[in-house]
Image (cartoon, rainbow over all chains, first blue to last red; front, side):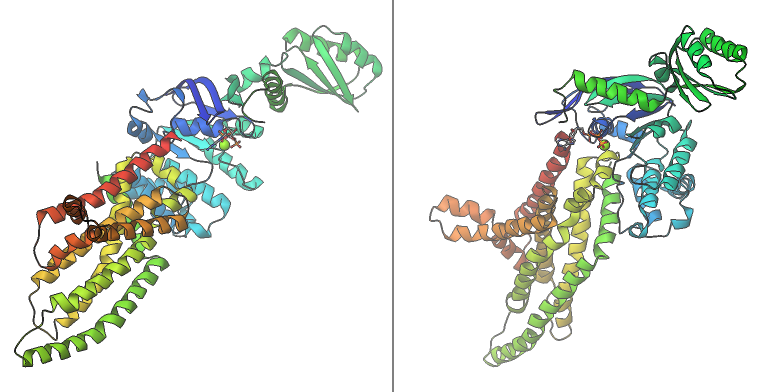
Length: 315
Length: 254
Ligand SMILES: Nc1ncnc2c1ncn2[C@@H]1O[C@H](COP(=O)(O)OP(=O)(O)OP(=O)(O)O)[C@@H](O)[C@H]1O
Ligand SMILES: [Mg+2]
């Protein structure tokens, strides 16, 4: 659906993104993750045809963004970082205007606007002036605007930025509900965001892709990536020592009766750990295997690259 | 293809004429024109009576309406930039420009739509100024022809001011800068004609007279419609709309 080849953008002599390569297939939900200034917005602006790159190719549904921008724009609903709303318009009129701009036939205008209002839960404020809406509602109007022509692709640039926790949760639920109906690319610098919504993650830092994988795959790739959390009734130093000697256990931390064990992820190791705890008669209460926290992965990946490439874009 | 232009035009026109700025401008125009025009009707009546007694007559078009139209023009030079300043500058500032540039419409449609919106609002202003000659119809009997061609000319000139204002609005994010630039360009355009009187070279005079807005306008006031004058005004407006289209299109290449 979206193909990006060797995409580079320079602002003057500052390189914002540097030879990006990735593709997004139909129906996927892809998270674009990176710290401030990584180049997420820049990449999205180029895909939407808002801005031309310095070099490289972007194809959307087979159309080159620079040769047939109109065809590409027809297929994309875009929510920029700042929702592009007119403060002096009513929600309903605004959506109707955008629907017309996006080429919705006159006969379908009302039903399309109604559908977008319903999807984003804005029916109650449809007759309100956008100026009088709260930030969260304006953000939702921004999303409704991207949705209104029922595009194949949704590109959402930090859809939850600046919202309070309750509204963030609502916005996430909303994006979740759009899964399956659209191909979605969303950017964020907050980790739980991608964990909540995305199937695949592209981590970008200083204009380069540092990792690209499914959520599970990414977690696994990191140092084996598994962690066992064990709760026992009778912790003892003997048990800790014994566990530390099991093959495949990297590290072990004990806090009260909870043991956190970093392991290589092999099933044999998990079994050996379980057997030992039972054999020691420590009273196993709970044992669960979790992926390594995405936060750890993120920090590790972005800082690795940061030190390896001191001449990157940001200072 | 032009559906996008109409969509932009209709929305912007409605927002524009409902804005406090438009109401203020229209109110101010009405005040100024009334203040000048109404006393002149009576003055004209006295002069006309005197001229009639001495066996002559006065041309209402060349006296009363000519000075009214001159005032309408002066006011439009200032009023149109106030209507056009926000067209693109504010979209940029408030980031709604991002929307225009990512929906499936062309830069030409955006520019044309914006032009039509402000041109419509300008026509509303001109209609107000048309009320005055219309009122005069109650007192005096005169042929409508020259009045109509004068107003056609006025509308075309207003089109140039709108295109100039649109262009000024396209090159900046600041509405203040947009209004100042438009004003300077409008005045420059109007005074270009005066330059014809300052040069001696006959060819130069000819060129300057041809591209001079006041010179061309004189034709309309006489009640004659010259294709060359029509074409001149239309192409001057088209030129600035075209420049705007170039600026909008080029915003992708930052
Ligand atoms: N118009 C511009 N002119 C010059 N430099 C720019 C411009 N826009 C972005 N940049 C630079 O390009 C780099 C990437 O910016 P971009 O906005 O794409 O980052 P981002 O990943 O979206 O960050 P954030 O999380 O803060 O939104 C940054 O270093 C930024 O300073
Ligand atoms: Mg950004």
